[in-house]
Image 1 (tube, rainbow, N blue to C red):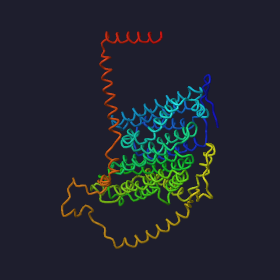
Image 2 (cartoon, rainbow, N blue to C red):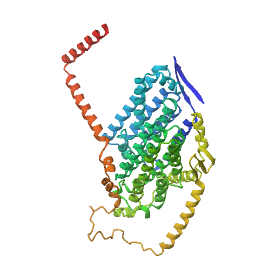
Image 3 (cartoon, rainbow, N blue to C red):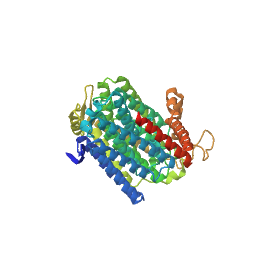
Image 4 (tube, helix red, strand yellow):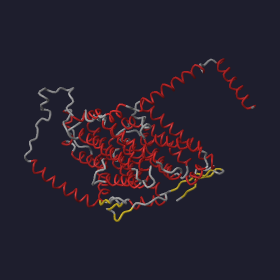
Length: 548
Protein backbone atom coordinates (compact mmCIF):
# COMPACT_ATOMS: atom_id res chain seq x y z
CA UNK A 1 0.00 0.00 0.00
CA UNK A 2 1.39 3.38 -1.06
CA UNK A 3 -0.13 6.46 0.56
CA UNK A 4 0.90 9.92 -0.64
CA UNK A 5 0.59 12.39 2.22
CA UNK A 6 1.20 15.67 0.40
CA UNK A 7 3.24 17.23 -2.36
CA UNK A 8 4.89 20.64 -2.37
CA UNK A 9 5.94 21.60 -5.90
CA UNK A 10 8.00 18.53 -6.89
CA UNK A 11 8.44 17.21 -3.33
CA UNK A 12 6.31 14.16 -2.55
CA UNK A 13 6.12 12.65 0.91
CA UNK A 14 4.56 9.21 1.21
CA UNK A 15 4.09 6.14 3.39
CA UNK A 16 4.33 2.61 2.04
CA UNK A 17 3.50 -0.70 3.75
CA UNK A 18 6.13 -3.07 2.34
CA UNK A 19 6.81 -6.56 3.69
CA UNK A 20 10.09 -5.26 5.13
CA UNK A 21 8.30 -2.39 6.89
CA UNK A 22 5.65 -4.77 8.25
CA UNK A 23 8.34 -7.09 9.63
CA UNK A 24 10.06 -4.33 11.58
CA UNK A 25 6.69 -2.90 12.64
CA UNK A 26 5.85 -6.34 14.09
CA UNK A 27 9.12 -6.29 16.07
CA UNK A 28 8.25 -2.82 17.41
CA UNK A 29 4.66 -3.68 18.35
CA UNK A 30 5.48 -7.03 19.97
CA UNK A 31 8.36 -5.49 21.95
CA UNK A 32 6.08 -2.72 23.22
CA UNK A 33 3.51 -5.30 24.35
CA UNK A 34 6.16 -7.44 26.07
CA UNK A 35 7.65 -4.46 27.95
CA UNK A 36 4.13 -3.40 28.98
CA UNK A 37 3.97 -6.48 31.25
CA UNK A 38 6.47 -4.77 33.57
CA UNK A 39 4.62 -1.47 33.98
CA UNK A 40 2.47 -2.49 37.01
CA UNK A 41 5.61 -3.05 39.10
CA UNK A 42 7.13 0.38 38.50
CA UNK A 43 5.76 3.70 39.73
CA UNK A 44 6.60 5.92 36.80
CA UNK A 45 5.12 9.27 35.85
CA UNK A 46 2.54 9.70 33.10
CA UNK A 47 5.09 11.72 31.14
CA UNK A 48 7.38 8.67 30.98
CA UNK A 49 4.66 6.53 29.40
CA UNK A 50 3.62 9.38 27.09
CA UNK A 51 7.23 9.68 25.87
CA UNK A 52 7.41 5.90 25.39
CA UNK A 53 4.28 6.02 23.21
CA UNK A 54 5.71 8.98 21.26
CA UNK A 55 8.95 7.04 20.74
CA UNK A 56 7.06 3.96 19.53
CA UNK A 57 5.03 6.11 17.11
CA UNK A 58 8.23 7.60 15.67
CA UNK A 59 9.56 4.09 15.03
CA UNK A 60 6.47 3.25 12.99
CA UNK A 61 7.02 6.45 10.98
CA UNK A 62 10.63 5.38 10.26
CA UNK A 63 9.71 1.92 8.95
CA UNK A 64 6.67 3.01 6.93
CA UNK A 65 8.27 6.11 5.38
CA UNK A 66 8.74 5.80 1.64
CA UNK A 67 11.08 8.76 1.34
CA UNK A 68 14.10 10.09 3.17
CA UNK A 69 12.44 13.27 4.42
CA UNK A 70 9.74 11.45 6.39
CA UNK A 71 12.41 8.97 7.48
CA UNK A 72 14.45 11.85 8.89
CA UNK A 73 11.43 13.24 10.75
CA UNK A 74 10.89 9.87 12.41
CA UNK A 75 14.63 9.54 13.12
CA UNK A 76 14.76 12.93 14.85
CA UNK A 77 11.60 12.29 16.89
CA UNK A 78 13.07 8.95 17.95
CA UNK A 79 16.33 10.57 19.07
CA UNK A 80 14.65 13.40 21.00
CA UNK A 81 12.07 11.21 22.76
CA UNK A 82 14.83 8.73 23.65
CA UNK A 83 16.83 11.58 25.19
CA UNK A 84 13.93 12.58 27.45
CA UNK A 85 13.32 8.95 28.44
CA UNK A 86 16.99 8.53 29.33
CA UNK A 87 17.00 11.81 31.27
CA UNK A 88 14.89 10.17 34.01
CA UNK A 89 17.83 8.06 35.17
CA UNK A 90 21.06 8.89 33.30
CA UNK A 91 23.89 10.91 34.80
CA UNK A 92 24.75 14.27 33.26
CA UNK A 93 27.89 12.85 31.62
CA UNK A 94 26.00 9.92 30.03
CA UNK A 95 23.27 12.28 28.79
CA UNK A 96 25.88 14.57 27.26
CA UNK A 97 27.38 11.60 25.43
CA UNK A 98 24.01 10.55 24.09
CA UNK A 99 22.84 13.97 22.92
CA UNK A 100 26.15 14.81 21.21
CA UNK A 101 26.15 11.55 19.26
CA UNK A 102 22.43 11.84 18.50
CA UNK A 103 22.86 15.38 17.17
CA UNK A 104 25.90 14.38 15.11
CA UNK A 105 23.98 11.41 13.69
CA UNK A 106 20.97 13.57 12.80
CA UNK A 107 23.10 16.31 11.24
CA UNK A 108 25.10 13.89 9.07
CA UNK A 109 21.85 12.15 7.98
CA UNK A 110 20.26 15.50 7.08
CA UNK A 111 23.26 16.66 5.02
CA UNK A 112 23.36 13.28 3.22
CA UNK A 113 19.66 13.56 2.38
CA UNK A 114 20.16 17.09 1.00
CA UNK A 115 23.05 15.83 -1.14
CA UNK A 116 20.80 13.11 -2.51
CA UNK A 117 18.02 15.60 -3.20
CA UNK A 118 20.33 18.06 -4.95
CA UNK A 119 20.92 15.70 -7.87
CA UNK A 120 17.33 14.65 -8.70
CA UNK A 121 15.03 16.87 -6.58
CA UNK A 122 13.42 13.76 -5.08
CA UNK A 123 13.42 12.27 -1.59
CA UNK A 124 11.76 8.99 -2.64
CA UNK A 125 13.55 5.68 -2.04
CA UNK A 126 12.75 4.62 -5.59
CA UNK A 127 14.78 7.56 -6.98
CA UNK A 128 17.69 7.21 -4.55
CA UNK A 129 19.95 5.04 -6.72
CA UNK A 130 19.47 7.31 -9.73
CA UNK A 131 20.27 10.33 -7.55
CA UNK A 132 23.37 8.63 -6.20
CA UNK A 133 24.61 7.67 -9.67
CA UNK A 134 24.27 11.30 -10.76
CA UNK A 135 26.75 12.44 -8.09
CA UNK A 136 30.40 13.05 -8.89
CA UNK A 137 33.08 11.00 -7.15
CA UNK A 138 33.63 13.46 -4.29
CA UNK A 139 29.90 13.89 -3.62
CA UNK A 140 29.29 10.15 -3.58
CA UNK A 141 32.18 9.57 -1.15
CA UNK A 142 30.91 12.31 1.20
CA UNK A 143 27.35 10.97 0.94
CA UNK A 144 28.39 7.40 1.84
CA UNK A 145 30.54 8.61 4.74
CA UNK A 146 27.72 10.73 6.18
CA UNK A 147 25.11 7.98 5.85
CA UNK A 148 27.39 5.34 7.35
CA UNK A 149 28.29 7.61 10.26
CA UNK A 150 24.62 8.25 11.04
CA UNK A 151 23.71 4.55 10.87
CA UNK A 152 26.80 3.32 12.75
CA UNK A 153 26.04 5.68 15.66
CA UNK A 154 22.56 4.19 16.04
CA UNK A 155 23.89 0.63 15.69
CA UNK A 156 26.65 1.30 18.21
CA UNK A 157 29.31 -0.04 15.85
CA UNK A 158 32.72 -0.11 17.54
CA UNK A 159 34.20 3.38 17.51
CA UNK A 160 30.70 4.90 17.43
CA UNK A 161 29.44 3.12 20.56
CA UNK A 162 30.82 5.58 23.12
CA UNK A 163 27.33 6.71 24.15
CA UNK A 164 25.67 3.30 24.10
CA UNK A 165 27.15 1.35 27.02
CA UNK A 166 26.48 4.07 29.60
CA UNK A 167 22.95 4.56 28.23
CA UNK A 168 22.17 0.85 28.57
CA UNK A 169 23.66 0.61 32.04
CA UNK A 170 21.94 3.66 33.52
CA UNK A 171 18.58 3.59 31.70
CA UNK A 172 15.48 2.51 33.61
CA UNK A 173 15.01 -1.28 33.78
CA UNK A 174 11.66 -0.97 32.00
CA UNK A 175 13.24 0.96 29.12
CA UNK A 176 16.51 -0.95 28.63
CA UNK A 177 14.84 -4.01 26.98
CA UNK A 178 13.08 -1.71 24.50
CA UNK A 179 16.29 0.26 23.92
CA UNK A 180 18.31 -2.85 23.11
CA UNK A 181 15.70 -4.89 21.27
CA UNK A 182 14.02 -2.24 19.12
CA UNK A 183 15.89 1.06 18.87
CA UNK A 184 19.02 -0.74 17.69
CA UNK A 185 16.92 -2.30 14.90
CA UNK A 186 16.28 1.13 13.44
CA UNK A 187 19.96 1.19 12.55
CA UNK A 188 19.57 -2.24 10.95
CA UNK A 189 16.49 -1.06 9.02
CA UNK A 190 18.30 2.09 7.85
CA UNK A 191 21.27 -0.01 6.69
CA UNK A 192 18.96 -2.37 4.78
CA UNK A 193 17.23 0.58 3.05
CA UNK A 194 20.61 2.15 2.26
CA UNK A 195 22.17 -1.02 0.80
CA UNK A 196 18.98 -1.98 -1.06
CA UNK A 197 18.01 1.36 -2.61
CA UNK A 198 21.22 3.37 -2.85
CA UNK A 199 24.62 1.66 -2.65
CA UNK A 200 25.52 -1.98 -3.24
CA UNK A 201 27.09 -3.95 -0.40
CA UNK A 202 30.84 -4.14 0.04
CA UNK A 203 33.49 -6.31 1.67
CA UNK A 204 34.41 -3.31 3.80
CA UNK A 205 31.02 -3.38 5.51
CA UNK A 206 31.50 -7.05 6.39
CA UNK A 207 34.95 -6.25 7.80
CA UNK A 208 33.59 -3.46 10.01
CA UNK A 209 30.86 -5.80 11.25
CA UNK A 210 33.21 -8.62 12.20
CA UNK A 211 35.66 -6.27 13.94
CA UNK A 212 32.72 -4.91 15.93
CA UNK A 213 31.75 -8.45 16.97
CA UNK A 214 35.25 -9.44 18.07
CA UNK A 215 36.10 -6.27 19.99
CA UNK A 216 32.69 -6.03 21.70
CA UNK A 217 32.89 -9.71 22.71
CA UNK A 218 36.15 -9.25 24.61
CA UNK A 219 35.00 -5.92 26.07
CA UNK A 220 31.96 -7.77 27.47
CA UNK A 221 34.06 -10.44 29.17
CA UNK A 222 35.80 -8.01 31.55
CA UNK A 223 32.62 -6.24 32.72
CA UNK A 224 31.40 -6.54 36.32
CA UNK A 225 28.11 -4.74 35.59
CA UNK A 226 25.43 -7.07 34.14
CA UNK A 227 23.82 -4.38 32.00
CA UNK A 228 27.17 -3.22 30.60
CA UNK A 229 28.00 -6.82 29.68
CA UNK A 230 24.66 -7.14 27.88
CA UNK A 231 25.27 -3.78 26.18
CA UNK A 232 28.53 -5.03 24.68
CA UNK A 233 26.76 -8.29 23.83
CA UNK A 234 24.17 -6.30 21.84
CA UNK A 235 26.94 -4.49 19.98
CA UNK A 236 28.56 -7.84 19.12
CA UNK A 237 25.27 -9.38 17.93
CA UNK A 238 24.49 -6.34 15.78
CA UNK A 239 28.00 -6.73 14.38
CA UNK A 240 26.95 -10.11 12.97
CA UNK A 241 24.03 -8.44 11.21
CA UNK A 242 26.28 -5.73 9.74
CA UNK A 243 28.72 -8.44 8.63
CA UNK A 244 26.13 -10.50 6.78
CA UNK A 245 24.64 -7.36 5.17
CA UNK A 246 28.09 -6.89 3.63
CA UNK A 247 27.40 -9.72 1.15
CA UNK A 248 24.84 -9.80 -1.65
CA UNK A 249 22.97 -12.89 -0.43
CA UNK A 250 23.18 -12.13 3.27
CA UNK A 251 19.83 -10.37 3.68
CA UNK A 252 18.03 -13.54 4.78
CA UNK A 253 20.51 -14.16 7.59
CA UNK A 254 20.31 -10.49 8.64
CA UNK A 255 16.51 -10.61 8.89
CA UNK A 256 16.56 -13.90 10.80
CA UNK A 257 19.19 -12.69 13.26
CA UNK A 258 17.26 -9.42 13.74
CA UNK A 259 14.25 -11.46 14.83
CA UNK A 260 16.30 -13.66 17.18
CA UNK A 261 18.24 -10.71 18.61
CA UNK A 262 15.02 -8.84 19.38
CA UNK A 263 13.51 -11.81 21.25
CA UNK A 264 16.65 -12.80 23.16
CA UNK A 265 17.53 -9.24 24.26
CA UNK A 266 14.00 -8.69 25.53
CA UNK A 267 14.29 -11.98 27.45
CA UNK A 268 17.73 -11.28 28.95
CA UNK A 269 17.12 -7.64 29.91
CA UNK A 270 13.75 -8.48 31.48
CA UNK A 271 15.44 -11.29 33.40
CA UNK A 272 18.08 -8.86 34.64
CA UNK A 273 15.38 -6.27 35.42
CA UNK A 274 13.77 -8.88 37.68
CA UNK A 275 17.08 -9.52 39.47
CA UNK A 276 17.62 -5.79 40.05
CA UNK A 277 14.00 -5.42 41.19
CA UNK A 278 14.34 -8.22 43.78
CA UNK A 279 17.93 -7.78 44.98
CA UNK A 280 18.70 -4.12 44.25
CA UNK A 281 22.07 -5.21 42.80
CA UNK A 282 23.36 -5.25 39.24
CA UNK A 283 26.98 -6.38 39.56
CA UNK A 284 28.32 -9.92 39.34
CA UNK A 285 30.53 -9.29 42.38
CA UNK A 286 27.37 -8.58 44.44
CA UNK A 287 25.34 -11.61 43.33
CA UNK A 288 25.64 -15.39 43.09
CA UNK A 289 23.88 -18.55 44.23
CA UNK A 290 20.39 -17.39 43.18
CA UNK A 291 19.55 -20.67 41.45
CA UNK A 292 18.05 -21.98 44.71
CA UNK A 293 15.98 -18.85 45.28
CA UNK A 294 14.93 -18.04 41.70
CA UNK A 295 14.81 -21.37 39.81
CA UNK A 296 12.32 -20.21 37.16
CA UNK A 297 14.41 -17.13 36.33
CA UNK A 298 17.49 -19.38 36.12
CA UNK A 299 15.87 -21.69 33.54
CA UNK A 300 14.59 -18.73 31.51
CA UNK A 301 18.04 -17.09 31.48
CA UNK A 302 19.53 -20.43 30.46
CA UNK A 303 17.22 -20.50 27.43
CA UNK A 304 18.31 -16.96 26.61
CA UNK A 305 22.04 -17.62 26.78
CA UNK A 306 21.78 -20.85 24.74
CA UNK A 307 20.06 -18.78 22.06
CA UNK A 308 22.59 -15.96 22.38
CA UNK A 309 25.46 -18.41 21.97
CA UNK A 310 23.92 -19.73 18.75
CA UNK A 311 23.82 -23.27 20.13
CA UNK A 312 21.32 -25.91 19.04
CA UNK A 313 18.49 -26.64 19.56
CA UNK A 314 17.11 -23.08 19.95
CA UNK A 315 16.44 -20.36 17.37
CA UNK A 316 19.85 -18.72 17.70
CA UNK A 317 21.47 -21.65 15.95
CA UNK A 318 19.19 -21.25 12.91
CA UNK A 319 20.17 -17.60 12.41
CA UNK A 320 23.89 -18.34 12.94
CA UNK A 321 23.55 -21.27 10.51
CA UNK A 322 22.26 -18.88 7.84
CA UNK A 323 24.98 -16.33 8.56
CA UNK A 324 27.77 -18.92 8.36
CA UNK A 325 26.49 -20.52 5.15
CA UNK A 326 25.94 -17.11 3.52
CA UNK A 327 29.56 -16.12 4.22
CA UNK A 328 30.75 -19.52 3.00
CA UNK A 329 28.71 -19.22 -0.19
CA UNK A 330 30.13 -15.72 -0.80
CA UNK A 331 33.65 -17.15 -0.26
CA UNK A 332 34.32 -14.64 2.53
CA UNK A 333 36.42 -17.29 4.27
CA UNK A 334 38.55 -14.92 6.35
CA UNK A 335 35.44 -13.07 7.56
CA UNK A 336 33.73 -16.41 8.27
CA UNK A 337 36.69 -17.56 10.37
CA UNK A 338 36.62 -14.29 12.32
CA UNK A 339 32.86 -14.54 12.90
CA UNK A 340 33.20 -18.11 14.17
CA UNK A 341 36.06 -17.02 16.45
CA UNK A 342 33.91 -14.21 17.83
CA UNK A 343 30.94 -16.54 18.31
CA UNK A 344 33.07 -19.13 20.13
CA UNK A 345 34.67 -16.45 22.33
CA UNK A 346 31.20 -15.26 23.33
CA UNK A 347 30.87 -18.41 25.47
CA UNK A 348 33.18 -16.72 28.00
CA UNK A 349 30.85 -13.82 28.78
CA UNK A 350 27.75 -15.99 28.33
CA UNK A 351 29.05 -18.38 30.98
CA UNK A 352 29.89 -15.41 33.21
CA UNK A 353 26.31 -14.16 32.81
CA UNK A 354 24.75 -17.30 34.24
CA UNK A 355 27.52 -18.25 36.66
CA UNK A 356 27.92 -14.80 38.14
CA UNK A 357 24.21 -14.45 38.91
CA UNK A 358 22.75 -17.87 39.61
CA UNK A 359 25.62 -20.28 40.25
CA UNK A 360 28.67 -20.12 42.48
CA UNK A 361 28.72 -18.78 46.00
CA UNK A 362 26.39 -16.03 47.25
CA UNK A 363 28.19 -12.80 48.12
CA UNK A 364 25.80 -11.50 50.75
CA UNK A 365 23.60 -13.17 53.38
CA UNK A 366 20.73 -10.91 52.34
CA UNK A 367 20.57 -12.91 49.09
CA UNK A 368 19.55 -15.96 51.11
CA UNK A 369 16.16 -14.36 51.82
CA UNK A 370 15.19 -13.30 48.27
CA UNK A 371 12.27 -14.90 46.45
CA UNK A 372 11.31 -15.53 42.83
CA UNK A 373 10.39 -12.47 40.75
CA UNK A 374 6.69 -11.54 40.36
CA UNK A 375 4.58 -13.07 37.58
CA UNK A 376 4.66 -9.81 35.60
CA UNK A 377 8.41 -10.43 35.07
CA UNK A 378 8.04 -14.16 34.39
CA UNK A 379 5.16 -14.05 31.88
CA UNK A 380 6.96 -12.11 29.11
CA UNK A 381 10.02 -14.35 29.58
CA UNK A 382 7.91 -17.49 29.19
CA UNK A 383 6.35 -16.09 26.01
CA UNK A 384 9.75 -15.17 24.54
CA UNK A 385 11.23 -18.55 25.55
CA UNK A 386 8.37 -20.31 23.80
CA UNK A 387 9.06 -18.28 20.64
CA UNK A 388 12.76 -19.25 20.74
CA UNK A 389 11.94 -22.94 21.31
CA UNK A 390 9.40 -22.97 18.45
CA UNK A 391 11.88 -21.27 16.10
CA UNK A 392 14.52 -23.81 17.15
CA UNK A 393 12.18 -26.72 16.41
CA UNK A 394 10.72 -25.24 13.21
CA UNK A 395 13.42 -22.85 11.92
CA UNK A 396 11.78 -22.45 8.50
CA UNK A 397 8.44 -21.37 9.98
CA UNK A 398 9.20 -17.68 9.31
CA UNK A 399 11.07 -18.24 6.03
CA UNK A 400 8.05 -17.77 3.71
CA UNK A 401 7.60 -14.24 5.05
CA UNK A 402 11.33 -13.53 4.76
CA UNK A 403 11.17 -14.75 1.17
CA UNK A 404 8.40 -12.26 0.46
CA UNK A 405 10.71 -9.49 1.68
CA UNK A 406 13.60 -10.80 -0.39
CA UNK A 407 11.42 -10.99 -3.51
CA UNK A 408 10.38 -7.34 -3.05
CA UNK A 409 14.06 -6.42 -2.81
CA UNK A 410 14.89 -8.55 -5.89
CA UNK A 411 17.20 -10.81 -3.88
CA UNK A 412 17.68 -14.57 -3.83
CA UNK A 413 15.18 -16.35 -1.57
CA UNK A 414 15.89 -18.86 1.21
CA UNK A 415 15.45 -22.54 0.34
CA UNK A 416 13.51 -24.87 2.64
CA UNK A 417 11.57 -28.12 2.31
CA UNK A 418 9.23 -27.87 5.30
CA UNK A 419 8.86 -25.80 8.46
CA UNK A 420 11.60 -27.83 10.20
CA UNK A 421 14.29 -27.89 7.50
CA UNK A 422 16.55 -25.12 6.17
CA UNK A 423 18.59 -25.89 3.04
CA UNK A 424 21.69 -24.11 1.74
CA UNK A 425 24.14 -25.07 -1.05
CA UNK A 426 26.52 -26.38 1.62
CA UNK A 427 24.35 -27.93 4.32
CA UNK A 428 20.88 -28.41 5.68
CA UNK A 429 19.48 -28.14 9.19
CA UNK A 430 16.45 -30.00 10.55
CA UNK A 431 15.42 -28.35 13.80
CA UNK A 432 12.82 -30.96 14.74
CA UNK A 433 15.35 -33.81 14.72
CA UNK A 434 17.88 -31.79 16.70
CA UNK A 435 15.26 -30.70 19.24
CA UNK A 436 14.00 -34.30 19.64
CA UNK A 437 17.54 -35.60 20.24
CA UNK A 438 18.24 -32.79 22.70
CA UNK A 439 14.99 -33.46 24.59
CA UNK A 440 15.80 -37.18 24.89
CA UNK A 441 19.32 -36.48 26.21
CA UNK A 442 17.97 -33.83 28.59
CA UNK A 443 15.44 -36.27 30.09
CA UNK A 444 18.14 -38.92 30.61
CA UNK A 445 20.51 -36.46 32.30
CA UNK A 446 17.67 -35.10 34.44
CA UNK A 447 16.80 -38.62 35.63
CA UNK A 448 20.43 -39.22 36.60
CA UNK A 449 20.58 -36.00 38.63
CA UNK A 450 17.26 -36.73 40.32
CA UNK A 451 18.54 -40.16 41.35
CA UNK A 452 21.71 -38.60 42.82
CA UNK A 453 19.83 -35.84 44.65
CA UNK A 454 18.72 -38.15 47.45
CA UNK A 455 22.38 -38.83 48.30
CA UNK A 456 23.41 -35.19 48.30
CA UNK A 457 23.75 -33.19 51.49
CA UNK A 458 22.51 -29.64 51.69
CA UNK A 459 24.66 -27.08 53.47
CA UNK A 460 22.99 -25.56 56.50
CA UNK A 461 24.95 -22.37 56.08
CA UNK A 462 26.46 -21.66 52.67
CA UNK A 463 28.76 -19.07 54.24
CA UNK A 464 30.37 -21.62 56.54
CA UNK A 465 33.34 -22.32 54.24
CA UNK A 466 37.08 -22.84 54.32
CA UNK A 467 39.06 -20.13 52.51
CA UNK A 468 42.67 -21.30 52.18
CA UNK A 469 42.87 -21.82 55.93
CA UNK A 470 41.81 -18.21 56.60
CA UNK A 471 38.51 -16.72 57.65
CA UNK A 472 37.08 -14.45 54.90
CA UNK A 473 35.86 -10.99 55.91
CA UNK A 474 33.36 -8.64 54.26
CA UNK A 475 36.03 -7.27 51.90
CA UNK A 476 36.86 -10.75 50.56
CA UNK A 477 35.36 -11.48 47.15
CA UNK A 478 34.06 -15.02 47.44
CA UNK A 479 32.51 -15.08 43.98
CA UNK A 480 34.64 -16.14 41.01
CA UNK A 481 32.41 -14.00 38.79
CA UNK A 482 34.15 -10.95 40.28
CA UNK A 483 37.46 -11.60 38.50
CA UNK A 484 36.32 -13.88 35.69
CA UNK A 485 37.86 -12.84 32.38
CA UNK A 486 40.65 -10.73 33.86
CA UNK A 487 43.20 -13.48 33.26
CA UNK A 488 42.63 -13.07 29.51
CA UNK A 489 44.85 -9.99 29.63
CA UNK A 490 47.79 -12.38 29.44
CA UNK A 491 46.92 -12.94 25.77
CA UNK A 492 48.56 -10.05 23.91
CA UNK A 493 45.85 -9.74 21.25
CA UNK A 494 43.07 -9.64 23.86
CA UNK A 495 45.03 -7.31 26.14
CA UNK A 496 45.37 -4.85 23.24
CA UNK A 497 41.57 -4.80 22.89
CA UNK A 498 40.94 -4.48 26.63
CA UNK A 499 43.42 -1.70 27.38
CA UNK A 500 42.43 0.49 24.41
CA UNK A 501 39.21 2.44 24.27
CA UNK A 502 37.47 4.97 22.04
CA UNK A 503 37.34 7.13 25.19
CA UNK A 504 40.89 8.35 24.53
CA UNK A 505 39.95 9.50 21.03
CA UNK A 506 36.81 11.32 22.15
CA UNK A 507 38.67 12.87 25.09
CA UNK A 508 41.17 14.25 22.57
CA UNK A 509 38.32 15.66 20.43
CA UNK A 510 36.79 17.22 23.55
CA UNK A 511 40.10 18.90 24.50
CA UNK A 512 40.57 20.30 21.00
CA UNK A 513 37.00 21.58 20.91
CA UNK A 514 37.48 23.23 24.30
CA UNK A 515 40.68 24.90 23.09
CA UNK A 516 38.90 26.17 19.98
CA UNK A 517 36.03 27.49 22.08
CA UNK A 518 38.53 29.40 24.24
CA UNK A 519 39.80 31.15 21.10
CA UNK A 520 36.29 32.17 20.09
CA UNK A 521 35.58 33.26 23.66
CA UNK A 522 38.54 35.67 23.50
CA UNK A 523 37.32 37.06 20.17
CA UNK A 524 33.70 37.41 21.31
CA UNK A 525 34.61 38.77 24.72
CA UNK A 526 31.50 40.90 25.14
CA UNK A 527 33.37 44.08 24.21
CA UNK A 528 30.92 45.89 21.90
CA UNK A 529 33.63 47.96 20.24
CA UNK A 530 35.69 44.86 19.38
CA UNK A 531 32.64 42.94 18.13
CA UNK A 532 31.60 45.94 15.99
CA UNK A 533 35.06 46.10 14.39
CA UNK A 534 34.96 42.33 13.66
CA UNK A 535 31.52 42.74 12.05
CA UNK A 536 32.79 45.61 9.87
CA UNK A 537 35.79 43.50 8.81
CA UNK A 538 33.52 40.62 7.76
CA UNK A 539 31.30 43.01 5.78
CA UNK A 540 34.34 44.39 3.93
CA UNK A 541 35.54 40.85 3.12
CA UNK A 542 32.08 39.87 1.83
CA UNK A 543 31.83 43.01 -0.33
CA UNK A 544 35.30 42.38 -1.78
CA UNK A 545 34.42 38.73 -2.46
CA UNK A 546 31.15 39.65 -4.19
CA UNK A 547 32.86 42.22 -6.42
CA UNK A 548 35.30 39.65 -7.84
